[in-house]
Image: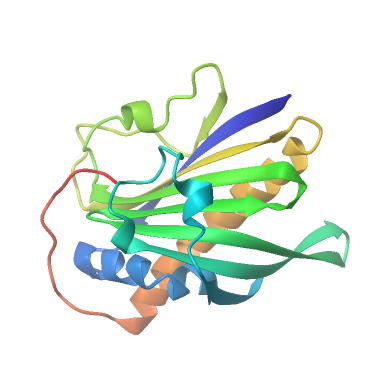
Length: 201
């Protein structure tokens, strides 16, 4: 029987980086791939509409959807690495992005990237597991509204025996890649546009 785990990863956005710049970077998709050291290549493929049509994770706006065939190598024992190939479906939204990955081994990963003001309040149903295991690297403090943050809500589902390895690998990879994603923007010293608050994607 498959099990589900949820991770919430919060990455502060430097004051020098406007929210609109972070959104634009997310919507390009390439910077998200480049922020993951384990990913070696990604190629655009036709969107598998049949496989996502009944997935409530996606928003109705199909025009914003793109799909890729991703190549990745992951460590399995010491210096030994295993090559992986899997499809990933991306959907841009008004305040972030949604990604679904159908990984090998029967593991499926749904990730929401949300750009929002700190102190915006609990993520509520977005991160509620209904009995599932949930891990967070910090709690939202409604009294702290200084600056903005990029939040990742990552939900994984897969076979019970495989999940400890898969979830541990995913948590570390997403924590590292979120920091690297933000560092890319700092190093690039991009823009000064602003974004208005909207609903979370």
